[in-house]
Image (cartoon, rainbow, N blue to C red; front, side, top):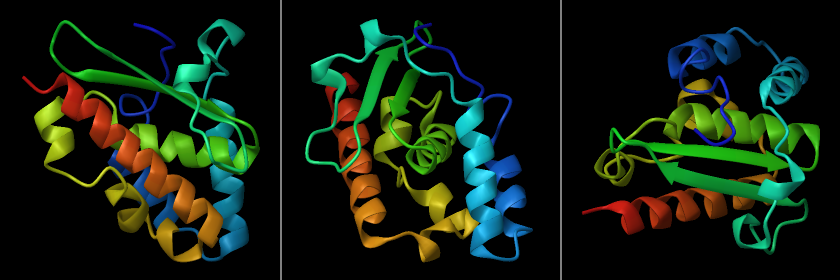
Length: 145
């Protein structure tokens, strides 16, 4: 597996939902996002390839993928900035280990709504997440057989 991480495995959607639901204010949620960012392993420079970089974003973001022997997709990501890395961790938690049909049959950003994070994101960060969601759908579409 390229660039393994704990999201979707050790850190599950249920854990994230409960973690963010107990946060009473945005500052506390920010702190939790920063904690998640620390759990996201930095990608080696060799994986920060131009074809994995999302263009048109304020911060640099890389989203890579591979299909595992099981047919499930493994995603790995990195970004500049702690909040972006925390948002990537949430995204990875929601999409990691799913098959292409599972990804195409669900909203890649559902975990943001379920955890209550979507209410407090800036317009620019919401746009970045929408771009990431479109990229995830495009990747899943390529692997669909």
